[in-house]
Length: 329
Image 1 (cartoon, rainbow, N blue to C red):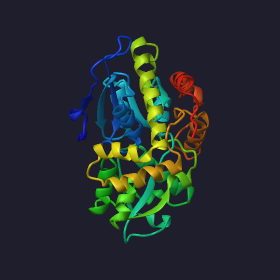
Image 2 (image 1 turned 30 degrees about the vertical axis):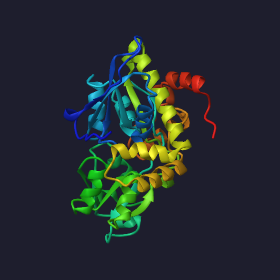
Image 3 (image 1 turned 90 degrees about the horizontal axis):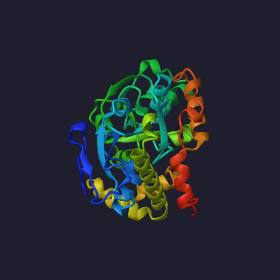
Image 4 (image 1 turned 135 degrees about the vertical axis):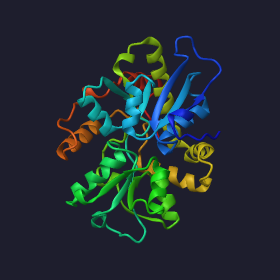
């Protein structure tokens, strides 16, 4: 099953034949950029039939800010959005809540074009490829530079798009550096096009990555709540399957990313499993929310650090864990 996703205009409905009467016939899910590894719990649930007949229209736009706009405008029911944009939107008055996460811990690598340096200090004066203002690829390099006392004012950021597009911008000379996920970074290293300077899991252990976010007004609508519950349970089952059978999960990912060799994808999934990034317990750990909010406040990205109760809505995860049980290796 292969599909090309570039914009809202080319969204493709992923349908199942029989939806339970209590469930919304269809929900719209929006995320930033084309399918990549963080989508894997959803893709596994889809492949295995763990969405119980729920029809999901999968929309893709560029960047977290645009993803949030689509959600807030009512053109999507749920958005997969970076944590910083969620915090900033709540601070600006958006009535939203995170209900689960496919990948609560990020697997980003900060990479620099081969030949342009091998250490973090070499980022001074460089141009970064990003997915858009306010998105994680725009904000996290700044956090790393601030942590290491590197002058970020000398850098420049250009909006490019998703992970693969950002890597191509570096390879093509449009940018010098970027923040990309494991699968994209390892591909660049394999081709000797980039050098990995650091991983975000090293720089900021416990830093939150993405949440699945909904408008608060939709939480108590019976059809939406039923759909959110199915999606939450399916994503938890998908996350656990990735840990239990990484090669099968890689084969599923290969159906969506056929340009990448299956052996390579198997190594990527095993690498991600070693970092324990998946939402095997639903992905709403309050400690991750607190660490991420506090760090962004200390670094000047947020005026206040919102408490977990103002960001997380755990009802769907709680119900899912009661049904599925705690994860056991």
